[in-house]
Image (cartoon, rainbow, N blue to C red):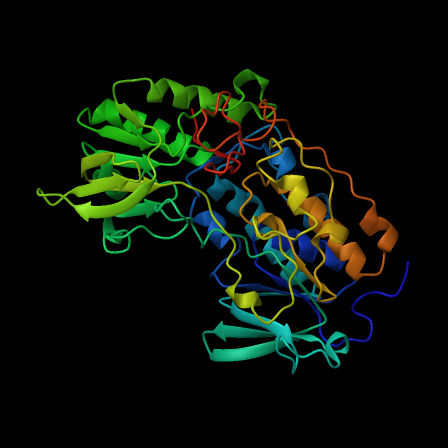
Length: 446
């Protein structure tokens, strides 16, 4: 043990985000006797997870509950079957909401909902000022139901995720011309086709699906089911590369992820789906019939589109950190030391090396990015990774540097070897971490 980072500075540890990783961080802080405040912009724990609550996770319950959080929940918590695969809604109701309540009941953890963080800085210091920087606490700027306010913190863990920042349909990282103007017919993420109101938007329609990762495969499978009762439904699958694979199949150690790839391949090979490869959207416009026309950089055109589903991944929102000194990789926007370990051009999803506080630390002592946001634009994050991250980070904040440095993490192999290959080459085996793919631990039920 050594002096904790919170030593001479005033204020609690503040965790941004009451999702699975933020709440795990709070549980570890409580176990070490650290005062902690959790700030969540939503109205409930796991509010982002609730937005994809209809989706079933690849990971079983055994990989979705932090060990220290489990101890806090105690014997009165109705632990789920560790072999089962919950939906997002199950995860919230069965774990995240009870965990937030248990944390609040401790008296040392203050979980605040409806608190949106708009900025993080050193108290009295903007980004440029050096003098006295390391001896000042952090100050978080907040929007609440009672108006704007601030909160002083000794340390900060940003576990706010990336859910609110989807990548655009446009191929060069920005919204394509016309994309915003036709936003009423474009959905980012996986629509809940089990909801009759949402199903009606897609049933019997021409749907363009952009993306090739697990989320896109989920959408293809869901549309395949919809077509069984609405046979006029048809799909244009927009693939930016010259081909698209479907993952590692039987070789995937996450069995549900491999099964999803198989189901998606069956749908993609059916008459329902027209696959458009090398399709990099550069424009969205209305066609003569008032439907959508999508144009690709190579001149391809898809006409008569009723709805577009964009599942091309997410990116971190760094706007709230503009006054914090960051050392981020220029490509992935993840912590620079972490980037080589998760670069999708190099690694398959199961080759992420153990990492913790040392890789996630930033130039501002006591500030860390954890969870999905720590991966920046890399797609291969798994919940187990986040649990180990915050265990190490909280140990470092508490001054237990030996424990912080002792990081052990083994992730399931994807069944796909190597990186993504050349941008214009076929993907062959379909590397799960190719740049045009996003990997969430999500799948639809059979």
